[in-house]
Length: 82
Image (cartoon, rainbow, N blue to C red; front, top):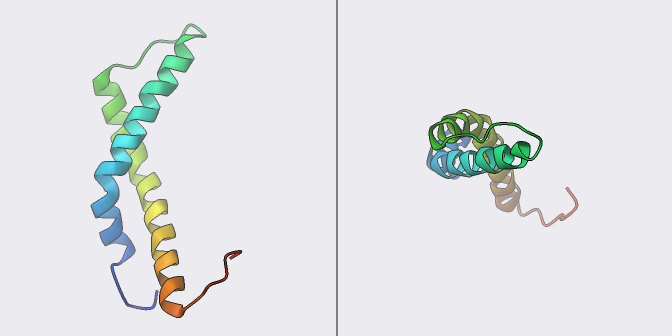
């Protein structure tokens, strides 16, 4: 990190509600698809709970990616392939 802008943990904290929400929706839709094979459909509480758990690492990795893009932009990197 070059030191400019937000740190990865700060980006993670700001984006976590969106990541957890997206993960919860995906858990619910995955349970609907799984129900076609005889599985149970996840309740809203289970979907939100699992979404909160899955959202932590997912948001962390996304924040690392955003921080990497910010570092490249600060360095003036226009290499689209990297």
